[in-house]
Image (cartoon, rainbow, N blue to C red; front, side, top):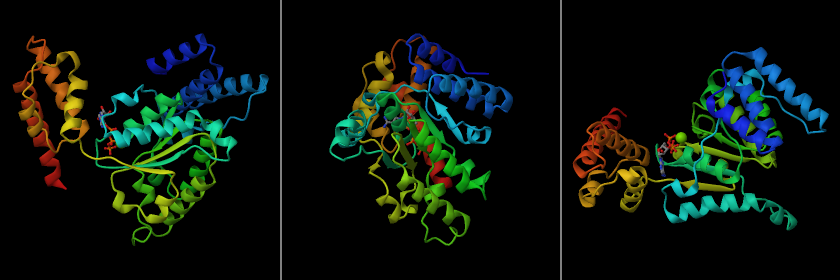
Length: 324
Ligand SMILES: Nc1ncnc2c1ncn2[C@@H]1O[C@H](COP(=O)(O)OP(=O)(O)OP(=O)(O)O)[C@@H](O)[C@H]1O
Ligand SMILES: [Mg+2]
């Protein structure tokens, strides 16, 4: 069944007379159903949309076939740029992608195109996936994640054909397309394990990326930059590097997440104790602290509660690091 979010979006787009959006959401719904194994229902929904578009003289629809539906996951998470805690320089570069997207016609008049092919690199939990959602929110585009791991395993042998379908979809349906865990495709081509299929897939990917002149934003994210090779970096319009949060970032993040739950905090202790945690880990520590405050009938998160939750996250963090 469709998710509550999808139903609400469908109603919203209908009531705001946003036909294009209505069609997009209906197709996403079809993809969702296809993933649940409801192929017949997915086809029915697509047929209805296609017929409606044809009747109105609409353009081509590249349908999410059931197989493509398995590979592409649609999200609707509203996140504004202001919620992303990153250094100003990085925020400015993300904002530039949005500005260029919004004013692409202006650029086009001078033969320039807006930056659309972006590589995000950095440690886990520092905001790469979140950035794709931010870009989708700020540009009002739908956000689609491509399951690169599945593409490489389940469809081994036909990955290139699937990639072509994905790039057809990218061209037909404007959106933010996130190739997460991109190193599964983009591993260094000089490494021995990248023979045969892997090499073909990467070359195909690079070719599709180069040929693409759609209006979509193509985002590739990795936390393994050293695996990616130089030929690849050249194909992107921008490469953005993410880092673990510094003191100032950690303070902003804690402030944002705790919101009205923030009591008077001993910042020096909190900032020292939280060093080395990613944004995601610190975000979780803050949420744990809020829950703890609620359960103990407190209206504010205090230093001891937050410190304890940070300590717990540090322990899991260290355990994980030791296992690697
Ligand atoms: N820079 C950030 N600013 C604010 N919140 C963040 C930031 N980075 C991460 N978070 C929080 O952590 C969650 C997970 O982060 P996200 O999925 O974007 O990390 P990632 O860099 O994609 O990690 P991975 O490499 O593991 O995929 C976000 O949904 C958000 O709640
Ligand atoms: Mg991610």
